[in-house]
Picture (cartoon, rainbow, N blue to C red):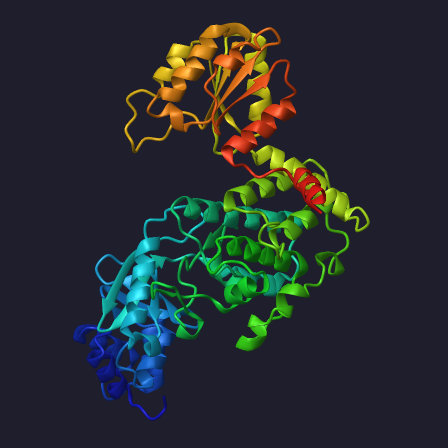
Length: 513
C-alpha cells in the first residue's frame, strides 16, 4: 500500500467505478486536500465514512480491476470461500438491499458445461421457499462469471459454531436437527435432494434458526461425475460417492442425505466428526472411513438412550436399515424431542441397545406407518366405525368415515385424471350394511377409478355366503369379523406396499434361513 499515493489510489477507485468523481474529491478534501492528503489519511477517511470497505480498498491497492460488480450488485466484502465458489456480501446499487452473492470461481467459469450446470441447478432450487432453506433470488451470468443472489443471513455457519462451542447441548442439537429435517422434507416434496449435507452448508441465524444452503450444488468437479447409460453426467460430492460405494447404494440415492444428516447430529453431540476429516480424495472415498465409526457414546456416555438410537438410525450404513425419508426423520426427531422434554433422559444402555433399538424402531414405525395414506371406511355400525377410526389414526392414516355406500362411490365419480384419488384403500363393512356393502364392493370393482384402488370387504360370522358373490382380485380381499386389528393392519400394509415393522421383518428373515 505504501507504494501508492493518495491521488493514485483515488484514480484507481474512479477507474474501477467504485465511487463517483465528486465523492472521491470529497473524500480527498476530508483527508487533507488533493496534493496534501497522505495515503493513510485517505484510507482512514474512506473507511470512517463507509465509502469503501477494507476488502475493497485492499483489492484496489493490489490492482484488481474486476470483481466488484455482478449485475446490479456491488460487492462489499468476502464472506466465505468453498471449493467451487466464493460468497460475498453485496448491496443493490439502486435499492440498497443487502444480499449474499455466490460467484463461481474463475477456474470453473471457463468451462461452459460447468457454468450451465451451476445455473441450471440454482434455478431449479429457486422455487424453494421455506424457513429452513436460504432462498435463491437471482441466477445470472455477468461477463462470463456465473453468480446467484441469496438472502444474507446474519449469523454464522454451523461448522464454525461447533468449533467454538464443541459438543452442543442435547436440546440445542435436536432443535437444529429438526430445522434441517424440516427443510429437507419440504425440498423432497418438490423432488429435490441436497447432495452435500455438511455443517458448513448450514447457517444459524441470530435467533438460532438453522437454514440450509447449496441444494443441488454439491460439486462441479468432473473427476467425481458418473456417466449414465444415456450419456448424462451426474455430479457427486466426494463424501456421497464414498458412502454409496461403502454401502453398495445406488448412485445419487436420496437416502444418502439422511446418513449425512446423522453425521451432522453426531458431530453436534460429540464435538467431532464421525468421519475422518481429510482433504485427500482417496482417503475420503475409502470404504473403511464409513465402516469404522467410533460409537457416539465413546465421546459422551451420558447421552439419553433415545438420542443415541436416533443418531444410530440416521447413520445406518445399510440404506435399507436407515431412516428412509426426510419426512420419517422429522417425525422421529419430533418424537425424541417430545420424550426429552417430558423427562425421558435415561442414559444409553449398551447391553440393551439392540433390544431397545428394535422396540424404538417398532414404536416409531407404528407412528408413521400410515403417514400420507387415506383409508375410507364404509360402514354404518358405529362401534366398528369408532374402532377402525381410532386404531387407524394411531398408525398415522387419514380416515374418512361414511355409512352410505352410494355416497362413498360417488366420491370417485367425475375425477379428472390429474386429481388424486379420495382414498388409497376402501374398507366396506357388512356388519351394519349387509348386502349393501357387498354390492358396493362389487360395483367399486367396475368403477373407472375404483377398480384401481385397493379394497377390503369385512364380513360377519353369518355372512360367509357373501364371499361366493364377491369380486376379488390381487388388490381386493376380505377379512372375517370379528377380526383382530393386527390382521387389518397387516392387510393394509400388503395392499398399500408399506414396509413391515422391524420385528416382522426379523421374523420373515428367520423363516427364510
